[in-house]
Length: 78
Image 1 (tube, one colour):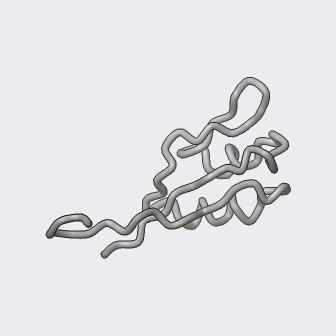
Image 2 (cartoon, helix red, strand yellow; image 1 turned 135 degrees about the vertical axis):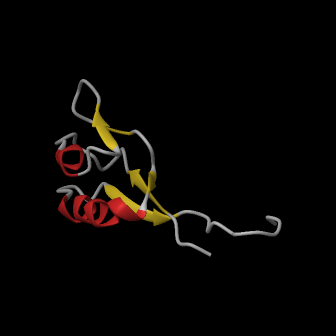
Image 3 (tube, helix red, strand yellow; image 1 turned 120 degrees about the vertical axis):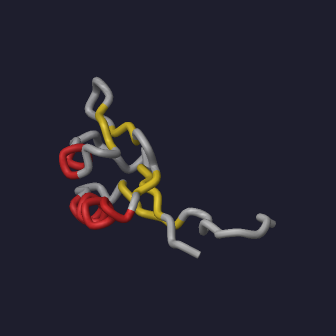
């Protein structure tokens, strides 16, 4: 099994400063008011270090990197 991560924004904690979009523009854009819009929540291996940095730098702790359901190779899903 391969570990899969996704990026999540807590809208109640976010104040729309936009730092996350600067640090992870491949996955986060901003709406007209400066609040993040996650374009694609899955974070591939090539972006994990950038995503971790964006999570750590969020001034409101509103950005999270969480595990997705693991990808299983072969067999059936339960």
